[in-house]
Length: 299
Image 1 (spheres, rainbow, N blue to C red):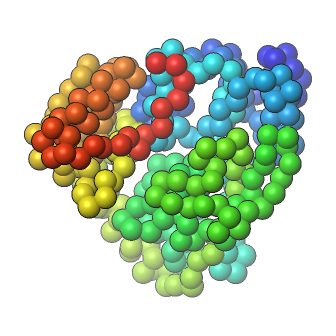
Image 2: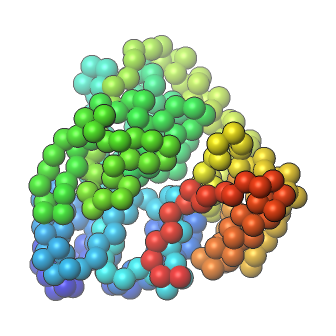
């Protein structure tokens, strides 16, 4: 398979035993057997087809936010779209952004074009592909509120366009969440607005994020989903767990909803801490927290 992938996308775009800690915002993760960096949709289609023909597992990666990769790494291939599929363009009140485009970049071009509606995404540390995949959101708005359609590819390399309502968006969920579809990009519809007002809103949200969240430490973002009727961070703080550590993993002193890599944390450290937090909160409040961070690979 290694040789086949090298022939399809070039030896320089295929790495072996690549440490995933170098490709995740948590800075945690063992080696991927094969790490692929295709440059075009055609290359992605060829990779997916050859992998399917050989029953070879492929994991799709953006910039590695919202992920906890196991210490033993990922078997099979990791197909990285970050920095590739980076088309970003404005047409009227619509923006097309490729799956590898950072949300911050999409939010910036919207602001510069006087388009409002994507301010919420300015500080989310992820790519468009990952944001569509999990219907990312912040401070209320979510991706489903701006998406018109999603360009995607099935495991046979066929490209299709799904309308918003076909994407089955829910809280941190979409039809892509449990499928083998690859997100290639999306079209978003925004509203005309005042450039200065849009930039001011982005600045305000950035200030809130920097002030209240541990952005200075490696993490996967919010560790737990918001339980209905509660806030995960508040429940964890009320349970007295701020600063709780397991090895190098720590419940942030700044925001209890974040588990951070306080220094050389392993995936096991994070998993142990997640379980401790879940059990403690359940014992104290009767609420069972559900991780938002996606677990990938072998632990």
